[in-house]
Length: 523
Image (cartoon, rainbow, N blue to C red; front, side, top):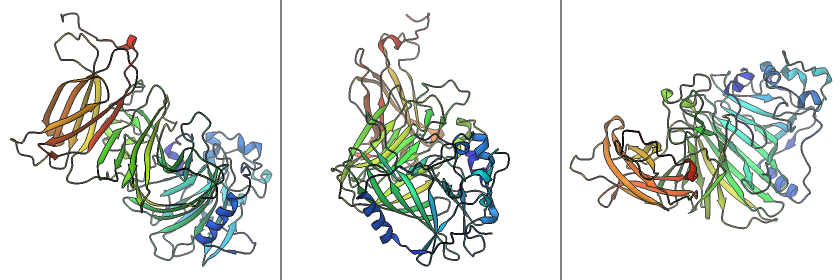
């Protein structure tokens, strides 16, 4: 997986004359033509896109790459009435697959040729005079009026892209497609090999980008309609054409990082209390159930699939936006956007799949979530998917239901009493929905189920600090088992459901690590 890039990466391309397109003749272009290209490409053998990248470019350090800046005198659309401008990204560091970029105007596409004049090489120690004339680009970024300094969207590396909401802070990434993630063989990373940037209409708040995707197993045609705002929205249309059978196809894949949080401190040796781009997987199922699944940094790779039919939405969110919980004044985890996927039309049967990979370092993206269709993916098919992406810190969810605001874990047992068996304590805080207005006489209870083990010491109490309720309980695992245990919890009053559903997966530690930590005065 690609590493999470430091967030000062956005400062590398400072903001805003115009990129000159190629002198070659322009060609007709629209989405139908792009789909035809992708379909025809799928009928041919795959050709690697690595290209002949010079050794000096391949061996760039981070500092060298950061020193190369786009020459803003050549910003695309700078001399127009557009609310958008585009900067192109240089090859180097992690980004070594040359791609082509075109400007699209009035239904005609013209390729933008690489030129060293497009970049300021600064202290990079790269001699632009020795670079090939057809070097190509690594990606591009978009800026939005009136802020020509900071990016709102970046497409960079394989089929990865990121966007920001009102906080103007990058965080997790999306991808065009995932292929064979978390299988016992190397994952395949499709690449956006060509982009077409449509010149925005004067005054328009929406920019349109087209992309051609290619990989050994599949090709694709993509259209992105991008509208910045407090919550940036993207309308995505994808037409996919398999070259061969695919075991695990991931639609609308999201990639994030979770290292340390309030519920998982396995790698809690850093001075900062929490380190993560996202803290949970949220889902609204086809039946309408709202689910919150806190993320973990497991000892070994975990794979979970949540079966569904025609899902309404799913996403990786950062619900905890309290600076004090992170104390990070460098990359600001408290400002990281969440990413919410809303399918358009019926997606049929399948599952939202979640992959959690062990990590010891925050620069490694170890969380992946996507929709996996429950049907065979075979050559000759055309697979059409449309969906909306919402990037921002606003957390989606129904007003009529409480939502999870915190999940804490620790050693179980009763305070002041000697522990005779190992147990895990779970504390889940709910807020919002009806909880702030519920009467004092109302009986609020917790529906808790566990796939294995014994639930004990359950308590449900008001928690005024969050204007909600706290549920705490212990789980005693079966003797010596290290099999993951799935937990399910929601609040209710009588027959009325008061909250979304909290899902959790806990793996009991090895028997030799189940320390009881009894104080000497307890007997």
